[in-house]
Length: 169
Image 1 (spheres, rainbow, N blue to C red):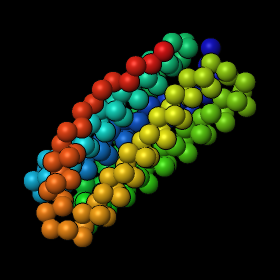
Image 2: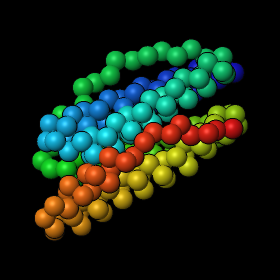
Image 3: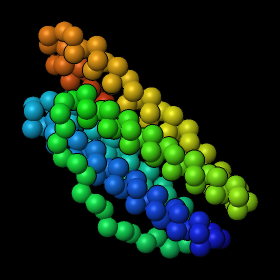
């Protein structure tokens, strides 16, 4: 059984994961307007991942006898100065998500809630991959910024990304 404080904190994370999905859809619309459908695809895949994360938290709360309380989702930003600025914001956002997951882990350990700590371990590992993935796009954007046509080559590369639901134990 979850403590009330842990239940609330996990509900807050469901909200944050859904906001993350909303943010990535907004970022995708920025690229769609510019005709960069590969970049948009990459962000739509990110949206799917965030909804998957939200569902994992949702399922865990229910499994532990808690109640999911959905919260209003604020409007995300909708305009950026450049493709690089989009991905820099995405990295900043993912780093914030990582900090939130770490706080949840600290809380689980303080409460001696070993089940939640075990559950959160998957998300800690996932955040390493999330940050790395966004940082990789940033590195490529910085490289292609110096070549004509580079953004279009990167757009084609990003179009190949697909969402594959992680296999979890």
